Amino acid sequence: FIRPTHLTLLNRKVVKVHNTAEMMLRFVLFALCLIAPSSLTYINTTCECNVKTIWLDVFLLMDASVMMGSNGISSATDYIEAAFSKLTVGQAEEYQTRLGVISYADSVNLIADLDKYTSRDDLFDLEIQPSTETGTNIDGAIRLARAKFASSTSRRAARKVIIIVGSSYIQTVYEDPTRVAKEFRDEGGIIISIDYLQGTAKSNPMFKKLASPNYSLINFENGKQLRAQELRQLLCRANCFCRRNWIPYTDKWSAPQGGCYLPVKIMSSQ
Image (tube, rainbow, N blue to C red; front, side, top):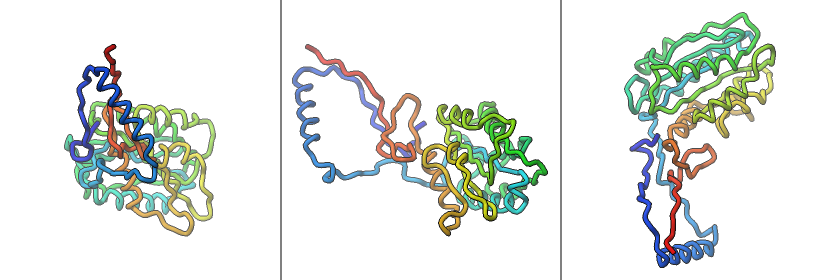
């Protein structure tokens, strides 16, 4: 879906190209090929981020297992609240972000559906109880989020985003979550993962596997604490995308910073 305030697109009619026009086009393309890459200037004409008009449906999947613990859950919840504090949280059809919350351990629990929070202030009431379970059923959590996205409460025009916050992943009897994560990404959804390390724990590669390309974060890395702005920046990137069947000229986050185009077949007359 194209944001009118974020993305300017050129809507072109397909016209019949005559031989003369085709020759001119070939000459222009040949001339462009002669230009050195260093002489080309990149101009960003799209997707300038305004956090107040970010327009997403987001599900937060929070690790509530023993490994995450009450302190980890509390710290991660505070981080999410700080990141969303500058967004417009609400239920309007446009230019507002909705947030749903799911906790997971062995079991998966819906804490809040997408239609619960009507303002940023409501997020301060978010409380996720720690579990006594040791499992990390991320597969089940993603499946529940997908089911809720597909329900009648979901907004058609809003891009779907899953934020996975976890301190560990233990492969047990549950399905490998990478398969359902790929299905969600292939449907156009974005997965942001936050590897929320506890104590001296090391980063788990599973979180990066689950995330969309360049959408993975770590709460503490190279002596630096993760900032709320870093998550907001990824939400900005997720907010920039093309309508169905249009092809993005993308950056490393797959955001169409170079615009969107609709591929068409041009027939030349002989």
